[in-house]
Image (cartoon, rainbow, N blue to C red; front, top):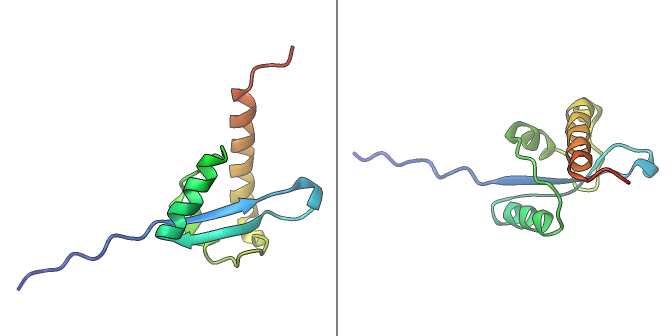
Length: 97
């Protein structure tokens, strides 16, 4: 009897949008598995948006409906990610003259 390997786990992706002016929590604007996930990642990279890979966070965010704000239970994790991205973007820019 031959053993069959389980199929590889399909890649997942979640896109978040955060607008400080909107005075709300970050919002899930796209999510998907497989080819949809690949398209989300490709569009983000084409737009110059940093793609952070965190399987645990993606797994939690996949449970949030598209167009819904993230739940309070994820505020700290997403805030840490946004703060890290902010530092990454601002440290990469040359200082103003």
